[in-house]
Structure formats: C-alpha cells, structure tokens
Length: 213
Image 1 (cartoon, rainbow, N blue to C red):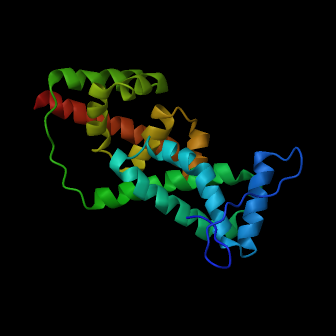
Image 2 (cartoon, rainbow, N blue to C red):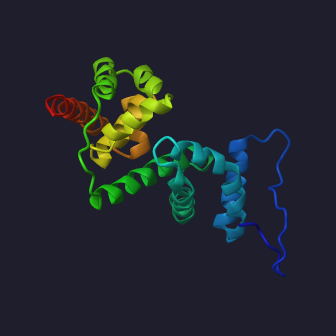
Image 3 (spheres, rainbow, N blue to C red):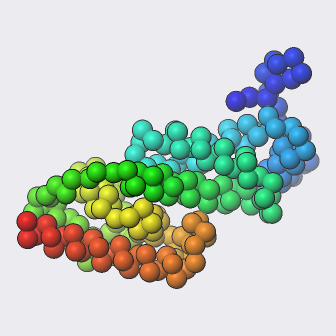
C-alpha cells in the first residue's frame, strides 16, 4: 500500500523533518497526519516497521503464517491508533500488538486442533529433560538455534495451552523478564509467573509419560 495523490497516482511521501529530529519524533509526525485524515500515510509506518514485526512473529509462529499474521498486526495497529497515548512509543506499542496477535493465532489453532500424542525417541526426550532441568533462557535459546532440536521443542510447545506457550517463548526463548513479558501481553506479572510455573510442570509430566510409553 502506497500513498496516492488526488488522481490516484502513487507518490513517494516522506514526512518533512526538522533538523535533528529523532526517529520517535518522526513517528509522531506521521501518526498525527494519519489521525488528521491522511490515512494513506500509515503505509510509511508499515514499511518502516514491517521487518521489525516479522522478526517478532518469526519467533512465535510457523514461517508460512508470518506474513498473514503480520497483516493482522498492522490492521489492528491502524484501527487502534486513536487509542495510542504516547505516540513517541509507537514501536513498543506495535511490538505488544504483534505478541498479542501471535497469542490469538495460537488460541484459534489450539481450539481447533487434533494433535496426536506421538512418541519421542529416547534421545529427543533427553533433549527436553536437559532444557527443563536447566530452565534458563540460554538453554532454551541453544536448543531453539539448532534445527534438529527445534522439532523437539515444537513438539513440547504444541502440548501446552496457547497462554503457556507464549509465556515460555517470551521468558525463555527470548529471555524477557517476567515484567517485560507481562507488558507485551498486557497481563499482570503474577499471571505470567503462574503460567510459567504451570507450563514447566506440564512439560515435565509429558516427559514422564513419554518415558513410560
């Protein structure tokens, strides 16, 4: 989507900035124009932050779903723009919308899923056992970065609730603090802490069941 003139011809629009104006102040200029009725100028923000939103969603979603969900993120951001109180904080606000949209994606998927409880090999079970025993963001990230182990981690995450999955990904895979994860999700710190505890407990139970299988 690109801005067009009165004749429908695409134009290359960029906000006019004062000397020394910051990126945040730049965003404010664009947001004010959009709220004043120049709705096509929102495409400037879309192009500017598209890569940023993709990088967030790629940590939470299957690759083939990222583009469609990213569109939902920007639609939500556009519709909610009048509610943004601190316009200079647009980037952080957008990141929160991206995380919440990813969470909503998994909520829909989990409501309709039919996931067979496949049996992991002994080697793969040990992978998860080691992760959960460590329970540190470094351990989770090390596994997340290995293609062969990522399959094991996906198996484990798929057996959590959407809520538990998002908490584990934010606090362990991305290394966010409980407070930071709470802000991204719009939850309380207590909610995040309880969900994280339950998720780890559930994963251990799954491993025990696999060991007995």
